[in-house]
Length: 113
Image 1 (cartoon, rainbow, N blue to C red):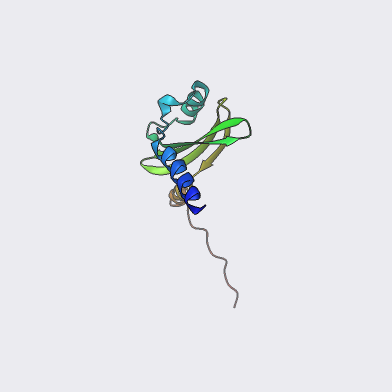
Image 2 (cartoon, one colour):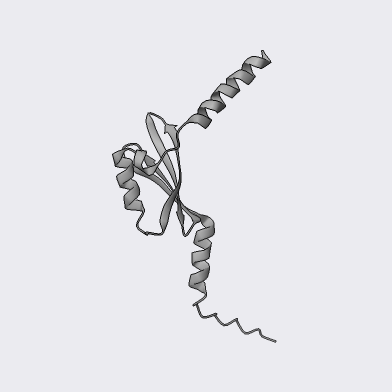
């Protein structure tokens, strides 16, 4: 009985390993068009594309890098509808820190004796 589970696991893993990776060129037209609308900066690049089922729809989870750093994750339905966009928290913090460097420090409240 245990061998059946081992064989089933090997078959499932081997089919996943043999699957062709998804490229931008292999995306359906509506998904590719939506992705192009998201990619506005020429320094942005697609790092990874995964798929998952959500009810009857096939969803494309696309990881985007900016200057070779993880930047954005976008979920696009097979119809081209953008369902979710998540900015990488680390990149958002770096942007906020850069903005704060120009800020003038506020004076501290005077303490009374």
